[in-house]
Length: 220
Image 1 (cartoon, one colour):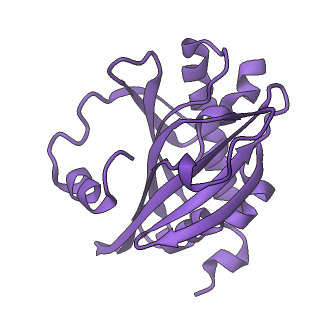
Image 2 (cartoon, helix red, strand yellow):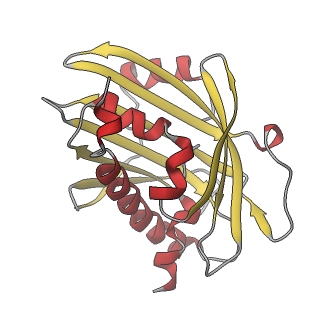
């Protein structure tokens, strides 16, 4: 169905607060899972969702294992220039600038069946030593004013908040948690957009699981 091909409009890497504050809340707050409802488990991924006040679009959380170290998985996520080669529908992805503990990244998606979408994200990055190895947290929010201007024929995405949490889960294994809340714009009904989000998340996990097998990510 066409909505499956639109999934990537709702799912790419881009928070609402500085990462240092968010990280403390994510790890320590007993309310960190408030509102999450289990949806299903498929393809080795556990899906949950929760409502956002004032929106018919849901926020999604996916938890799945990736057979590689947390450091190797994080290298895949950091390899922005390679996104067009392995991330679904990604036509462009490049680093705009670095600023303290964050980076700015521009991305353009080309799903073919509708007009291209683009956005610039500010991604805060943090890592710390946990039981079993390094834990990585990337959190993002829109930063369109810091990237290229809008282009004719390309729809600017203005809502894109999310995070990756990568935790060691044994020898050369990672427990990856991916959260996303976004609105790709256009006229796709909210209920189809929510379904498409699940499909898109599976595609992203599949892409990362495959890409991390390349030797360049395991090298120190």
